[in-house]
Amino acid sequence: MQKWICEPCGYIYDPEVGDADGGIAPGTAFENIPEDWVCPVCGAAKEDFAPYNED
Image (cartoon, rainbow, N blue to C red; front, side, top):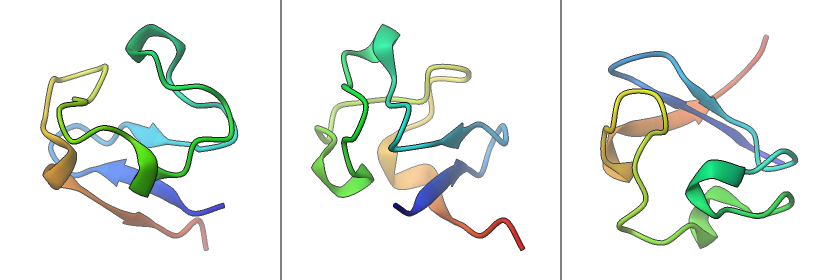
């Protein structure tokens, strides 16, 4: 599954892990996260994330 990076702080959303503190279950694709979800590190909006490629 595609990982996404928070451009302001560098947090990486991994859909296999989810975001337990934010109520996002493991296995949740970024596209399926509610629009009002924010970065758990810096509070940036979902629109501030970009696709992340590890290579």
